[in-house]
Image: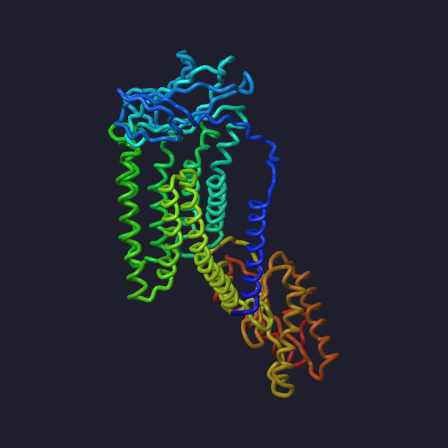
Length: 556
């Protein structure tokens, strides 16, 4: 383990220790409630009289499950205590139930599922905040309920009275864990989706599917947090969103596996994704046409999810054992995290801790998500490094290392681009050659020869690069393609460049000079680029001959 990684782990350990310590102290040290919202609630969950069919139950406590047949009407009644004010409100929750509320036999509220013709909205579990009439203290309150859903027929949820803000605050506090987890998943999912658009070298969509999984799971958790009514009052959204996103969560997960772990079984994973999509469409159609409600059709979805989990685990085990796929091994071991939390949640449910439903599973899925995200980020990091290396190598394929100029390949690519454009724009091609480079290399060493090349290249870039591009074609040969230069300006630039190159003689015991030949390209004069370049080369060699005969021309 290198030092940087060890330091990161130490920092992470101390941060987590500090966080856990703060939470522990906050929970264990004595403290009064100094929150801005006071929880002055009146608990109305004891002493109810419940009646259904010919049966009467006395002194019933809420919450309670009567386990009745669907569409069985039942009532619950008790006497209201002294209320703190005439503005007191009542909070009741209907779990896929029609509900009517009476005070001393007088109806004060009803919520019955409406009928929108040939389309059927889903049953929804809803909060109801009711303003109690003045003088309700000491009067009898009666709740009349009926549910078409067997699972909730006979359900009696907790009932509280108090100020509206206190009642709402308690709902949010009771579901704070799910809300926080939902926000965390949403942030992580959006981050993944944004990141996917910046990683160009990752040749699959694993980040998109992983981000989609997190966003969809966030929606499911928020739907289960019982606070969706804060944002919408639409029955279809409140009653159906949690059921509809489950197949979508499964689709994003199997497609993630297809891209990251089970590439050999892409057809199987795609088949599962299609199966879940068909299941989603089927569930929606069955619901809206009134054939089967969401909660009933969800049984098939649960079976498909179980099939997906088992099949993917088996395939990953095969990948691990038969092909040594370490990513499959990681996924299998990581899957034990949500499994443990799911078992813990089942245990709390059996013990009657219903408020924990969804929270423990959410924590387990979050830890699982963070684990697989870590390994995904490692893959992304490798892809980014590969992308950088690829870009570097691509760039270096067209760069001369010694001078930093474009090399012969870059020159040929540039010329090819000019040939394809046929823009008709005139330009000047200058071919250049360092004189006496072989003599310098032979008598003073290649180090001095390289210094002479760099000196010439520096002068070329200084005077010619502002007007176009410069290239080193190899050895002592250079080329420049220049635009918008008249003969006088060009001659001045070549003169200045040569004077700077001649300055090398002041610091070195050898003469450095450069031969230059140039030509202006005109489409009506040259039939092809090859002829144009050849003629320019001849001009450069003619200038080189004259230089050697000490008949240096000021410009080529």
